[in-house]
Image 1: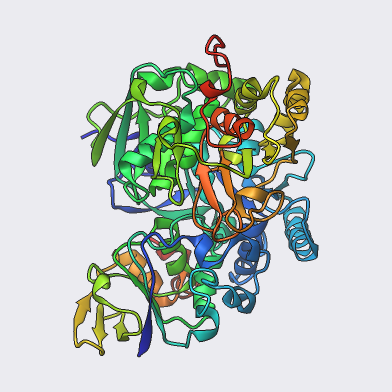
Image 2: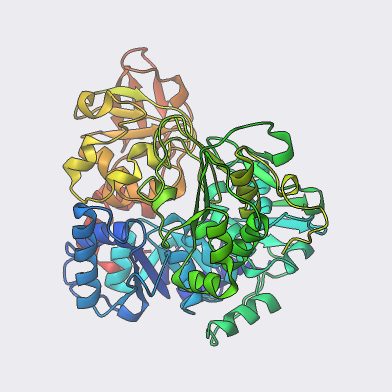
Length: 427
Length: 163
């Protein structure tokens, strides 16, 4: 019996010929990520470990302050100060504001993550790097601390569900729509403990941005990791960020899958996930007239330059509805620089959006766009849980950047075709 | 013996401890806001030994370890649910919070008096006289749980013994 890509990567990192689903293995960790929140707790735990005063592989320990930075208040500032001092003392990699952004955009763009790696991170959306053919999963702070101390972590080998996409995507349908639709089919715990392995001819045409979005949200189906195979799109991206040394792994033709899901991607319309679970996805055209107060475009799920171009294409020549706040959150400093270079910044300003620094702020109800009572928000983020972005009575609708931009202009939930000419060919 | 605090399906980590309260590692402050919006009566009403009885997919969402720590700091003896989200479950085991998968959790009502025995894998409901079985943990995970968390496990057995 063959092995899946996830099993092969775990076996290679456990020093074994093969591993079986359900088996618990101790694996070498290639990259160990923490943000300021997970790092703060991890430092407490690290200091309790007997004999552990140094991170064993400091070059693999990455610190990205992004949830509440630049600091929103004094307690946040204190927390970040402590984490920064620890990272610097340990000679780990600290990404200061101005050179960084949101962790899941920063790591790929700096060539830190790549195919065949085992990556853990103190953030559930660490699954993002599976888009590059890595085994990448979110863990808690204690696991981060243990991996700082010994360079390893224990993992239960997940069974794999194979998800295959057929057909050609319709206009305005992106990675976000594929994953929202898939979660709608599989439910929010349909892939719990599993690896989600993405296949199909549809994905060959999907740019890295869309793949990152899909892997990012595989956790929203409960998955341990989401993973793509490397192809020319991946290789070209890796070359562009200077990640040159890597191993490509491939699932064997006779690999065993716990389930297989086939999706007719050509039939999917732009999706929107209604409150308050990502599984509540349906075609935007079916939701009816729902007025909104805020739109968030960007963050780790849809903060890539491709996402910004899609939003700009819809917003160009329009103005955001007079009663809607439209907040653009580029995924990183790198993305924001490119936005300026391509003139997208001007489009957003002219459309009367505001452009924020790269931060998780609004997505976690932290700062930079917290929702008040009974407010409604269309957001390109990954979770529409009750209270996620602010008040408990606020409602969050998840969508792709073009749908979010169209909704900002309309003042109610709207698809891009409601706003832009049908002659316009989407980017 | 503790009282059951009954919660819904898909209780997420934002509900357990909203993101805005995660700017501290102080356990007592985390406890003050634990489940504050879902059950405003919880932070002040919970008593040591009480049991949280969740629905399906308990603890879904973020990887924040603040969530099991907040519950632990409230003195909760155990969380019982028909299923748990992966990261929350792992974090709970790592920090030494008892989490028990119990297919019959739905039979427990708010306020029921429960006696939880993690070693025996049983929950006795003193209010209605029923007894429920909990699913056994994989042996390695059971050892971590028994030690009271991953750090204590390693202190006892060393790194070499892991797996």
